[in-house]
Length: 322
Image: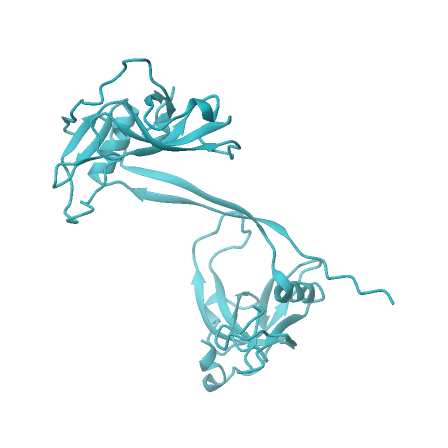
């Protein structure tokens, strides 16, 4: 008798990314604008320490900090780690060292890349200097990287000089692109859920202790802490428990605004899942509305949910699922 083959382990690449836009305080504005002008600024704390990069509030007293000072563009490596395989968008595309550098006149260290041919060329205590980017825009990338300093270059004993922090055309805001690439494997419970969707079925799992049916299944009950192995098909119809009206068009999503995104408690499920509501004007969607899934040809999940035409569900039926 031949043993059954284990189920295929599902894996898929997943990317989470978004642009993070923020305005800058006077301290951060001066720091980034200074980099554009090849000037490195720090801030003096209440106890006289010079912090680079500058912070807006004293880490000890929490007082606002405004006393800017200029430090040197040379410094000393305080610690380091070798990066043998640079990732996309890192400062250098060849192997380099991540280093903490205490710039001359500063009391704290700044993290950046050091262009070095091999780990043997890097050492704690070595002297380095800023390599400025050819085109500077008022960002941390205006420091392209650090590089070994010439013998005798710079002065470790230099004191930071007061600076007014005033520049023409100051940088007042930045956009930071956040991105996370990883490989996702859903595990036993969600693999069964995904396989069910391929057959236009919604499969949950029931807790043997509290009997709540989780959709999508998690493999264990978060309340009771026991494994959930009893699979249950729920729906296909369900009830809108709560919802929101979306008025901002999402990038790469071909849906006209406004539209409704709702929590939908499928019949037989112990908690609500997310879904878009269609087939009804957005201003007629309501709590208790009975809906059913609409699948597109070849779709991996319901495209949206539409009204079934049934009477609205009574509030007491779904109030525990809001």
